[in-house]
Image (cartoon, rainbow, N blue to C red):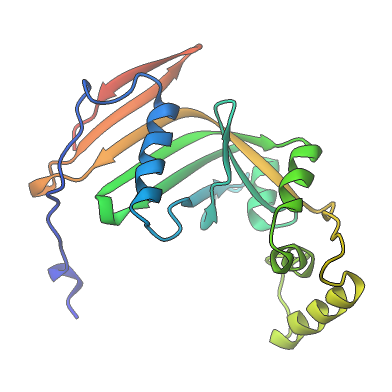
Amino acid sequence: MNLADLREDYTRGGISRASIQSDPLEQFKEWLKVAHEQKIPDANAMTVATAGKNGIVTSRTLLLKGIVDGRLQFFTNYRSQKARDLAENPNASITILWKELERQICVRGTVERTTRQTSEDYFKVRPYDSQIGAWVSEHQSESIADRTTIASRQAELEAQFPKGTEVPCPDFWGGYQLTPTYIEFWQGRQGRLHDRLCFRRSGDAWDLKRLSP
């Protein structure tokens, strides 16, 4: 396989200043709704990039779980690498790609934890297996001996919290919310002459500009 030969032209259309909403978060919701209606698998999947004080950037795929009061919410382990990064440097970026729609959204901003109540409320609506999984991954990102370690801990927790009973939200698990300062809407175009419309926060308002592809 020659990677240099792998390419695809983009022909689904474009975006203009006239067609985009003045509030980027409303535009974000509109594109997300379209992706969901098109039945794109994991339409809310996003790549979250963080960097600690050492400047080393790491990224991983998470699920966007809310857009509340202008902030993007996701949930994770507070002992993970991403959590350690955010404790040292609250700046992060998010990218959501909908390849089927030839669209992506890039977001930059600052991250803080959600309230504990928000974390607990969301944890309660997670499937049982995901609740147990949060407990199993208490030491997320740390080395383990083998897969048996996970299976053994899972069995212990399922015995401690049988299905049908309430599984408490771990104190090492919860939500984060990113307050955007930059939101870019990208639409693929032919010849790699893509449309890029960028919102930058200016006080309480947003400044919209078109970027060169």
